[in-house]
Length: 127
Image (cartoon, rainbow, N blue to C red; front, side, top):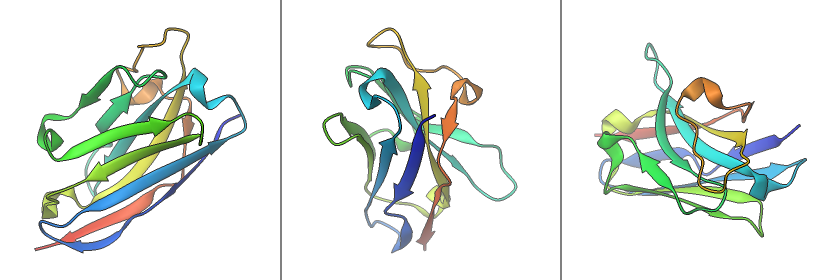
């Protein structure tokens, strides 16, 4: 089992920034590809960003490219999501997720590929 705990969400004005953190425990963190996903009320859960276990491969949904950055610190068992230039449409509950990966640059292709999920942290962007 991998336990994931997100933090860093909150209320911010449009154009502001937040940094989400996800602390992992229970297994060797560096063996897992990680992802940030979000779900707004009435909408399906979607990828925001994904990162391979090595950190060498990173992917973003088009709507956040150039504004969000995913990173990881394997020594601290933590993955981060730096969110800049936030927009009201970024309002959602943000979830951290993990997928065991054999290949160092593997990233999950589907939201359902992840085996472990955190409880989420709410991000609200006011206009």
